[in-house]
Amino acid sequence: MLHDLVKKVEELGERARRYKDALSKNEMLTRYVLIDPFLRMWGWDTENPEQVRPEFATQAGRPDYALLGPDGKVVAFVGAKSLGRKEDLEQYITYCVQVGVQYFIATDGVKWEVYDTHVLKPLSDKKIAEWDILQENLGDVIRKAFILFSHMPFSGIAPEPITTVKTAPKPSVEKVRETLQTLDKITPKLGERLRYSQIVFPDGSRFMLKAWSDILYHTVKWLIETNKLARRNCPVKIGPKRYLIHVEPKHSTGTEFRSPKEINGLYLEANFNIKDLIKHAKTLLQQVGIDPSQVYLTAV
Image (cartoon, rainbow, N blue to C red; front, top):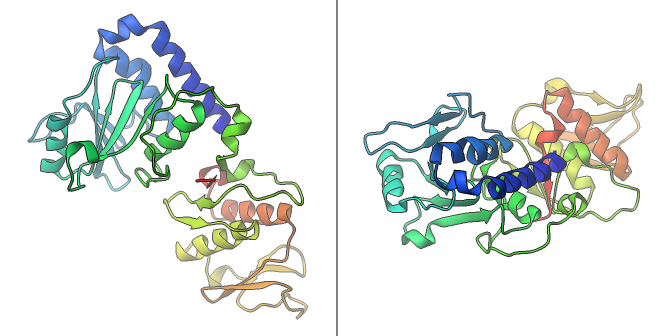
């Protein structure tokens, strides 16, 4: 997935350079060529009116797009302009405030700015993220733009400062993977150092990581807290006589768990090597219908 994101940002940058003259004169073309594809990168289906509605009519005005959450409520307005032009921020933020929408995104397809309209500060201080797909390296763009991820929009995964624009060589896909990776792509070697500091689940829940074992621990914790795993599912087996999770820290033979972790009344056997820890976390997620590619590890 990260390889695809890197490739798509590169492609959009090439489009912006190649069609600069035409895009600078045509807002709809900019939306079609640059803005819509970028939104789709982050899970927004621009052809699904339950997620994205163009020319969204409100009593205050007509934003170019409205992004809708799973409950049907608008989570953000988007103001689009032709390449190289700027939005009337005051006007759009007024739309947001009057309608009760917290976030506003201004973009010309290359430069993106995200504002939290509920922040009681001057306009310049309402900005919570910005990036430029032509001026910044791919790692920074992807890290910052992760704030748009449709499964947990505006959760603030990009750390401060996220508005500093730096021109730097584009990193390799391997470099990007050092700061952001999906759980399905994690294949650690025995003895490998943990490079990631947080695990982020599809609903936006995140937990700090200090050791590889925390990945399995927090996966189980999240599944329990979201009622996807409970006493009714126990025991969770990993062999004919061994349990991964049970209501007591014992296997079917009566042998006690070697490294039991109590989580909300259930017990996790955590005595595994790195590879098995990751394997069991992935398997648990798949068993309840969660794609491990929707779970992220981040170094920020």
